[in-house]
Length: 161
Image (cartoon, rainbow, N blue to C red; front, side, top):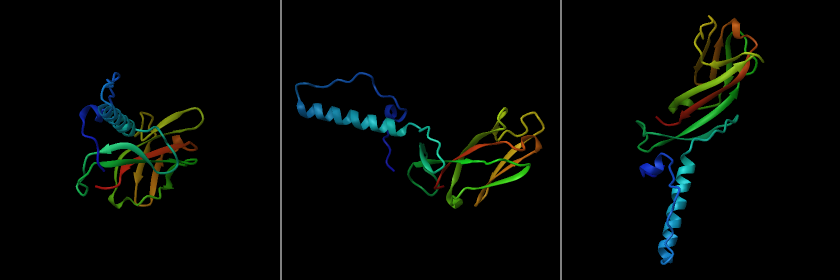
């Protein structure tokens, strides 16, 4: 994956004003092409806000890893938890995670009235939500205080170490 290294473009800042030369058509086309390239780079590097029940590119770009000399694209998958019961709740993630590096896990569960973040430790209530991801499942382990809650959990990751 080749990424534009222009620092201004990398942080997503596109100048408001642009000068178009009117006396040189070749230079005019070069300026237009450069502006379009910068615009596409900036738009493509903005993190998307799409949370679907399928794997998507998140538009995150991660530094090169131990097995990858290039910057690595980030991915995101969101899952419905179903109705949770006290103890272990398994959700098959369908990912081959042997070379994955998880970068974030987040979500919320609710009972229609109360909304609780995943993972919240004990949240000061004595109740807890803990998440473990193994090669097959997402395991959401809850205490009795969150019985019958449901919601979504999102995993973000890169696929190469």
